[in-house]
Image (cartoon, rainbow, N blue to C red; front, side, top):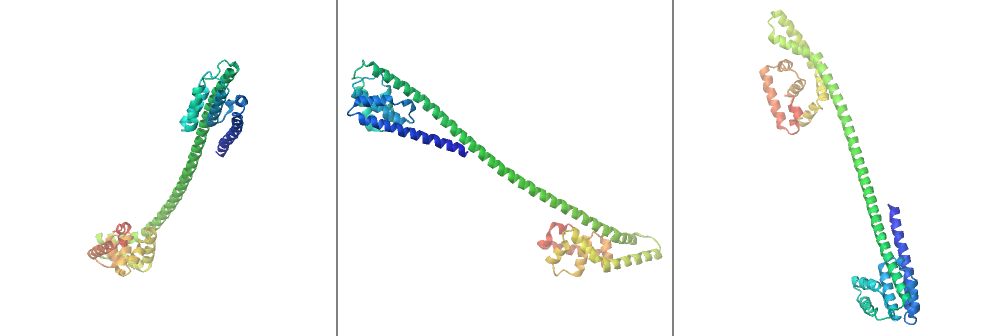
Length: 327
């Protein structure tokens, strides 16, 4: 990109240097014109106008050349050269030079028309002017092509930068998504492990209690059998009350995102009886099993569960879906 800009600037600098040299030759011809118009015309004929770099220099030369021909009483075979000056100064609204060019144009036909050398030189300058026009057209097309290349390169560089930025953003999103997926997978593995732990705890320690409770309410055996069941249930109940409650509480917190700790924080004045009820409910014990653990009737347990649910539901933090879902 920088190389193209440097090339473009080099063309401009070279063009300016050429223009500077041409202006010096025109100044010399202008100085000769008042006292030696023939030498001035010869100097103007020696200039290869096909090498001119800008239209201003061309118009200046055309005006001087026409003035030198008039000063030498020579007639131009066509209006081609003087029209260069007329058209340029008219387009640029340079009225003094424009009016001068119009006067010279009217005088171009008053000179000698039989000077064959002057006619051939004039035609040569017309040819050089046509070559100049072709070269300028090629240079303009070249500048346009160069500008198009520069713009295309700029667009490509901009698009590549945008693509790099978008790729970097996508890579960051992919990395973030990958890290999030890893965190989710790790969380799911932990959850599965903790749920397995809780299920194992319930299966190993509470399944017997639940089964004995169901048997106690449904058994049609003898009083001795029922008494043996009752004694076994009472023994297990006492074991749960004294030994396993803390383990149940810890397992529930591990598997349910510290649900019991959150309830404790939101309801610091919760009664121990209600808290024990909440632990048993969160552990998935049946109402009959809970009634035996709390040593209360099933109806009382239902009523207490309803009151506890209403109290939790009325709070803001404790009304979270995971808390209410245990009921």
